[in-house]
Length: 401
Length: 231
Image (cartoon, rainbow over all chains, first blue to last red; front, side, top):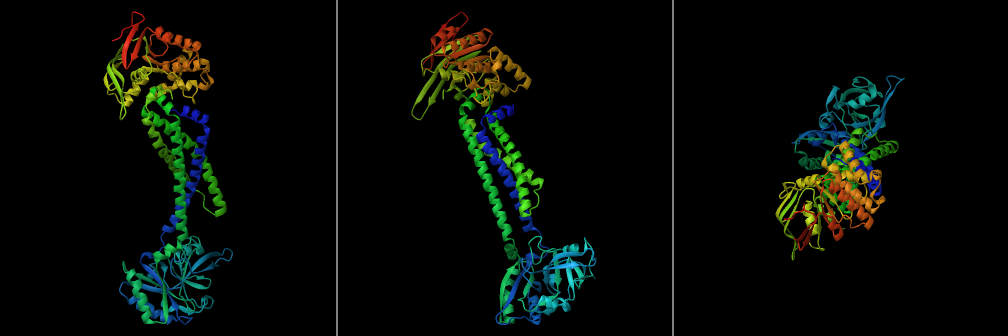
């Protein structure tokens, strides 16, 4: 019934076309499996939760028209008025626009055990007592920053000695103190740790750039402050107009700029990841299309070359289905060999990417999915030309062509 | 074995209708060796195609080994063709990429025989035509006569009820043609019914009965021995 033996022997005698498709199939599998892995990794990065209430947040930045320093009293006044606006849940200042992929970062080290100091790259996020509620963070232990702890200084170096408290994200605490260890009450680089909040992305979205966030009550007077506003559902759009108007009324000698939702910030911050997803997806589609068309072309060529042979087979008793099955089986054999070679190429490509681009190793699941996808692609591509054989009459066998 | 009554076949284009067969009647009994002759365009190939279930007819009745073939599905016709009919073509029609063994194997696979049964039948058929030693050869490595014998082995392996031969010696020189003809006579003597289309009057006269087709009709028949009959 199945003609694997004769098919393999026939292919062996007509190698050229088959070898081309085998190479094409193998390369397709290698590229598709690795590209799909990259796409999936980037999508996971883009879609991972931020840990803050990013759907109901927007931020803005103040820019001076003449002055070069900012008064914390003015900031307190502004935030107080903003919080009074209908639709505002809470508001706080910050040193950066959250999720913008820019901010302050620093190395911090837990030196409790001098033999085994624990270092981490820290996202230093300046805010006030409203930061917890504004960002929608979850307090896990201790407490958050308090209003009277906020210090105003012209630079971090000046102010670092006077910082009275620090709150760590859980991921940072894990890195510095160990999994689930509560560091509340300890000193970190001379700063008293007063609490721990659930892990969240605040300034940076780039994976691996920092190990977590340290929330500090410090206002930099020489740097344009950001205001972060948390709105009730469907209120952000209106408030993005009302808040700048309010701020202008409170003090016309400054400019409000960079009024952005967190969706805008995420969109900008993940631009490279999204570009990579688009590029890799396009590559997958293009490579698959080229391979699919190659298989369609070769199968069509073989069908046309073998019209007489198909007529003979039909005369000898082959049903239409048997002829279609023959061409599909032939395709299965070719793509099968291509897939085996493709697995080797996939692993080789991945090994190169691991070595040169610090990528993680290709999981077996991607290889298996790629094998199934390429196999189905081959079958689908061969189906249309194979289907055309049903038009070939068995009477062709008696024609002298 | 084969009974055709008032078979007609018309090929139509937008402007022309060609009557390939008109009210064609033929009755071939089991074990007969019938030759079919006629001028080019008389309808011999159409007859062969209809007799071999390669083509449908427009009107009439065709009984093959007691089975009415009218209205059979393509799949049922393929099955009947595979089980009842062995074909021998003028151009041998071996599949060039398959060796002789695999060529003989083709109809047996469609029959659904197991590997051992196929091997037994292939060995027997190749032995019968004297090609047992050439089974691993490709068709291109054999002479014309050997290729036609391989094609006869392919036709015989399924142990069909009858053989349909289309100019079986048309592409062979006289010596090879004689060998193939002797082989067909030998096969017929073992009980296989043969219908042979030919242009060669000498070969036609070696059959037990000759049917002449002119303009799609049976114009004449000659009984070369007492067992033949035509309707």
